[in-house]
Length: 102
Image: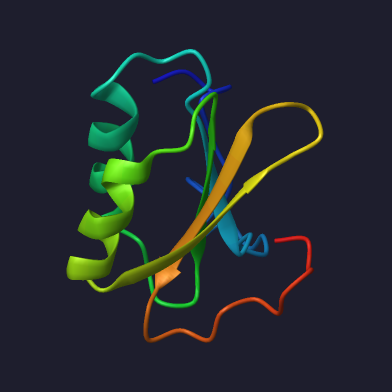
């Protein structure tokens, strides 16, 4: 995974810098099952109160049921640039207000 594909707060802990509230996985152009494998790996280490924002060229419908069963919630939207933005968080965390920019 290159730096463009995985951005966010990784590696900032303990450096005196403020941790970002989200981690971005840019999976545009990846072929299945790579996006699902990578997001499920990242979810295993996702602290409460943080989110993963995944960018994809198609909506990952098979992922939604896996997220629900695993205790996560998500919001998917088609952004003006023409790709999908899927925001994922622990279901027990309060979701972002509707219409907010994650």
